[in-house]
Every structure is written in structure tokens, then in C-alpha cells.
Image 1 (cartoon, one colour):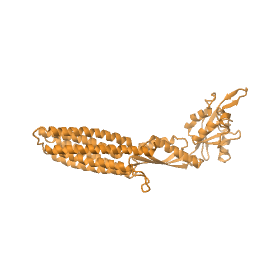
Image 2 (cartoon, rainbow, N blue to C red; image 1 turned 45 degrees about the horizontal axis):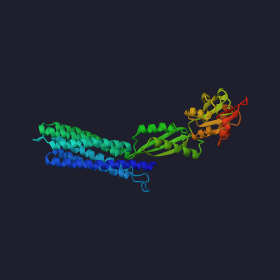
Image 3 (cartoon, one colour; image 1 turned 180 degrees about the horizontal axis):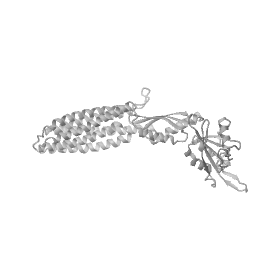
Image 4 (cartoon, rainbow, N blue to C red; image 1 turned 30 degrees about the horizontal axis):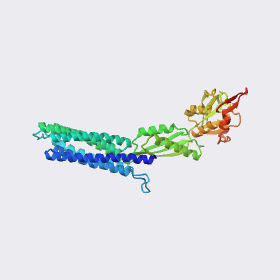
Length: 437
């Protein structure tokens, strides 16, 4: 299943839950309206009107998801994902209006006691049914909204959960009206109206910020920056931007890499970053990567050496059979030795070079200088965007760096020996050994 099909399926899931919620909420509004009118319960009738308003907001969420699921076109090359955010903005405005109306009703109820004489059994049952259905709907809307990262569904889930509290207040109000207890019903409605106003205000604000491409996900951005910087070949991330577009996120990043990286390798690095980010964050729809040469940062290089003698250490003839490795930082004018490493895999018989590379990738290498390297090691280094330069003479570390700066070191485009040649050598005693340089 490709990513486009997966996105459409997730949006379709949101549309289905919005349709089910619309039908159930409409049915509840009709039941509460009929029962409230029949038993002359203004409180239940008001709750029915509130539910009828919810039908509009849920339908708006479903319509926004339907628009967001439309395929990209020449007129809308970025898709219609923000239609879902517009639906969320509409829902927020309606929720604000509902909160204001409920506050007015609570204010009126605060100064009037209930007028019921007989116990309102059927209105109480209708309110209890509304509480149960709204609670189940709120949980389902939140579950699906989080699964598909739908702003409008998550907003509607919060609104539906508040509707549960409203129905609870209606239920309490019906009983208080029967008991002729003043003030408590109005207090409950006023408190709930304040919660609704808070939800509506936050919803409108977040949707407006989302439409203005504000950075609403600083934690996600930090995670993405950290994940990108872990990828070998990335030397810096001067700019990473994340913006919301309906149920999806869009990422734009500028990364710095080896200045000597060929264009096709830079393209491969950009593809790798895109695959990593979209693979770990399924709500990220696109990742735009711009690769720039690193000009202000030093490049980390690896050199297999026969001794530990600082800058005067001489290069070893074989990558995998070298007893030591020196990691150096090369800037435009300076050379700094970062560390020396002992070849702990020297006594092993196969894949020594591969094991060395795995152990030293954490150094964020950009270059390797070597006199000989086998096939497996060569392609593993290339896979990790590490340039390999051939050193044909027994030079010291300092001489190698100077020759590199002068542009006199050839770049290796193929291994110096094949896999078969690298696996068997004859030692000084005439015994055949299986190794991996």
C-alpha cells in the first residue's frame, strides 16, 4: 500500500465516524426535543437545541475531511488538507456561540427554581441516554482523531465530552426542578458554559495559528532535528520548519553536508532523510530537503595507521588489518586529532572492515584515507555518505592532510580489491588466512 492510499484510507475512517456521530446526535436531538416538549421541560428542550447545533459541527468536520481527501490537482497542487482546519475553525465559532447562549440560560436559571410537580421519569431517561451516547461518541471521536491526526475530530471529541457534562447538568437540573431547589441548576449551567467558552476560544485560536502556518509543534520539530542529525552524511541542520496542513504536517529542512558530495549523492541523502522522517511520523505528508555544502564546519576523517605517533603516525597498507585508527578534524586551516582507536577486531577472520565501520560511524565520519580497502567495506562507507581517498605512498597523517588540501589525492570510485581477494591472504608462515580488510 503506497502512502497516498494510506492517507486516503485514514481520512475515510474519519469521514465514517463523523457520519455515524452526525446520525446518532441527530437522533438524540429529536428524542430529547419530543420528550422535552411533551413533558413541558424547557431544560430538556434547550439541551435538544444544543444537540441539534452539534449536528452542524459534526457534519462540518465530516465535510472538511471529505474535502481533505480529494486528490491533488493542478489548481490545488498542495491538496485541500486545510479544508479540515477551516472546518475546525467553524466548529470553534459555533462552540463559542453555544457557550454564550448557555451562559445566558444559566444566568436566567440561577434566579428561578424548577416548576415540576411529578417526577420526570421519561425526561430523566432521555438525559441518561444522552449521557451514555455522548460519552461513547467522545471516546470514539478522540480515538479516530488521534489516529488520523484530525484537528476537527479531536476538537469535536472535546466538545462532545462537554456535551456529556451538559447532559449531566440537565439531569441534575430536572431532579432539582422536581425538588424545587433554586440556584444549583443555574450554577451548574454557568460553570459548564465557561468550560465551553474556553474550549471554543482555544479551538478558534489554534485553527487561526494553523492557517497562518505557525509553529505549533516545537517538540516534534526538536525530535525531527535530532533524528536528521543522527543520519551519517548530515553535518548540520541550520533550518527545519514544521507546519500543519489539516490532518497532516509538512516539513521543510535545510541540511549541511560534505562540500565534495556529488549531486547524485546529495539527492540520495535527501531521499534517505525523507524516508526516515516519513517512516517515523506517519502524519507527515511531505518532506522537502535542501542540501547545502558545509563551509563553516570541519570534516571528520578516518585514517588507518601503523602506530600512535600523533600527527606523524604513518598510514597502514590495509584498512581492516590496521592495528590503529586515528580520527581527525580537518578545517580550512587547522588539523586536530580527535582520538586514536585500537582495532579490537584484528584477531577475527571475516568482516573485520565492516565491524570497524559500525563501531566508528558514531564519529560522524565524512572522509576516509586509505591505501587499500575491500568490497564490503567500500560500499558500506559509500552507503553512509563517506568519501574515500586513495593514498598511494606511506605518508604520515600530516602529509596526507596537506596532500588532500592541495587537491592531489585521487578519490576512490571502486574498491582496491574484490571480495574474493579480500577474504584470503597468505601470511608470513605460508598459512592461508580468511580476512576482511
